[in-house]
Image 1 (tube, rainbow, N blue to C red):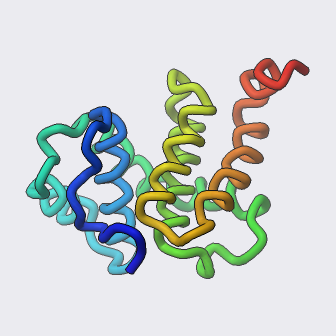
Image 2 (cartoon, rainbow, N blue to C red):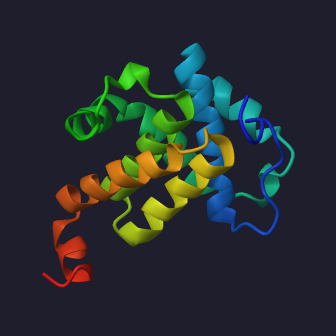
Length: 156
């Protein structure tokens, strides 16, 4: 596979919210590959080592919200990517969906944090340069969906 198995223990010294994102990425990976039911995925993930240290509320929001909004999230991502979504690696696809979901639905999380978290997930679970791709796509999406915040941060 890649640097870490998707069933590896969550990274040590991570916040509960980061752990929630790691587990959500694993769940979305299963969903993308097997089109498994979100409830079955959740039940399986909740049994995983280290899940007790994750932010369970944020995990549920990410897993169920991303799956529920996947069509809309993909529609927002499609004009920003250089290939059909089906050609993305499942890790990049899942990280982009999580990032897009958080950018649109969790405005309390600064856009730079959302992008950084998606990049870190891709670094941990994805291919060698996948994190650069995820960073570029989410940066463009943030400029569209959080234009006031990104404009203020960039001084415009």
